[in-house]
Length: 254
Image (cartoon, rainbow, N blue to C red; front, top):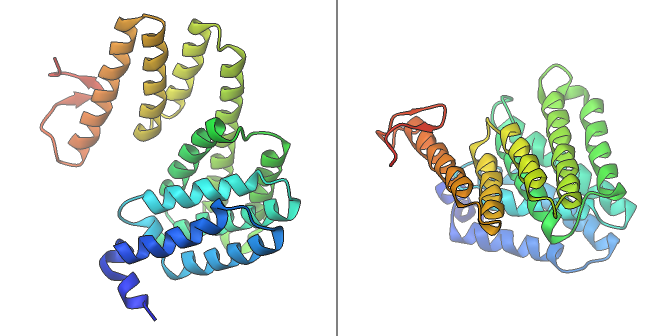
């Protein structure tokens, strides 16, 4: 009935946000496994009908959906884990198709961000979550329609990176009382996302907080300067800044 209104401004409108938030409530409030199965089916239909809402414009809806689906991938019910993994795979495939079979950059970025957030919020990373990652990889390997494109490789790379974040976080927890080792782990993780400025910024900010907490203010300042350089470089690429940047080294930032 309201499809035309929902599709206004490439699905970036107030009505779309309200409908999306209603869908999210079903995942945010505890449901039975039987109810969740229908919720996942409704979300597949929703994403299939309105892909622009998730893969174009602002990334808020994409990020929120990735967070809630990943939370379900850690569910105690094995059937819910499978359904959530299937929905997540469908979501990534829709992203790939929306980008004319070029990449899943948006879902990749938002999923890594969601994992980082969930580690703090829900403590994911155990056998249940690893099982869900294996299911997603199996879907990618068995998808005959995607056999001759790079989508399966992108899915494999994403799940590998998620496992890297989980392992690094586990190591950080072990060394939380060793500031130098903790920062070294943060630095390695930040460097692993050199090609993804938003994620690199997230880990650099975390490093800065650790340095500041330990009284290492010069090191904290260097982290923030590097973040400023990342932002300046991004703005330069977008044509919104005249600052000259070479490999994130700020030339005229005082």
